[in-house]
Structure formats: C-alpha cells, structure tokens
Amino acid sequence: MSEKTRYSDEELQEFKELILEKLEKARRDYDTLKATLSGSDGNDIADTSPTFKVLEEGASVLSKEEAGRLAQRQAKFISHLEAALVRVENKTYGICRATGKLISKERLRAVPHATLSMEAKEGNNA
Image 1 (cartoon, helix red, strand yellow):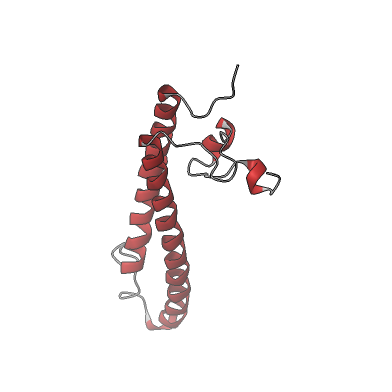
Image 2: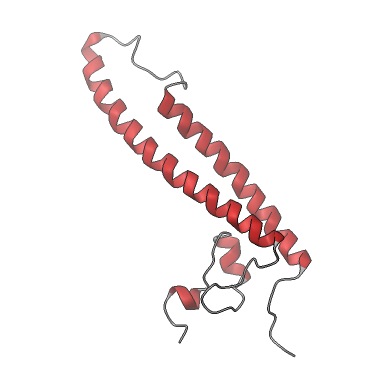
C-alpha cells in the first residue's frame, strides 16, 4: 500500500474544527489585549491618589509594553491559523513544505498551524 499524500476530507474537517476553536480563543485574547492597550478595560490611574500615581504610571507603561508585544504575537498567531484554514480548504493542510510528506497528526493537534514535520524542523530531511 502506498504512503498517504494528503489527509482525508474527514481528517481535514477534524483539523478545521480544531483550528476554528483555537482561532476563536486567539481572537478573544487579542481583543482583551487591545482593550488593555487602549485603556478601555477600566484599569487606569485617573482616580488613584497622587502618592501611588508615579508608581502606577511606571507599572502601567511596562504593562502596556508587554501587552503590545503579546498583542503582536497574538496577531501573528491568528494569521498563521487563518493560513492553516486556507490550506484545509485547498486540501494541502498537513503536508510538510520541506519534505512533501504528511506531518504527524500529533504534531498538528499540538501546533495546528505547523507547516514543517518534526523531521524537517530538526533538519533531518536529508
């Protein structure tokens, strides 16, 4: 029997549902981070006594910088998941871009936007 060259429609549907779940959560997390950055989460220092204001402003700047980095990472993650959905629709999902072989289901369940098999990622595709 020859080696599978792509996942079945049923398998692709399973992965699509997993990706959609992760995408929904990622978008919620991203919206939360954006709210933190815009200050619309209600946690500002407007009503804080002057004694603590300086300390809180410093912490707020650090917190916003960290939230900004997290938001950028989350936006990148979302775009990777969206690209994975396109690959599902094109029936190319789960095919390693380096080796052309199927990426293991275990890897795809752990990292649904993966485009490289572990073999290729570790550089053992010779």
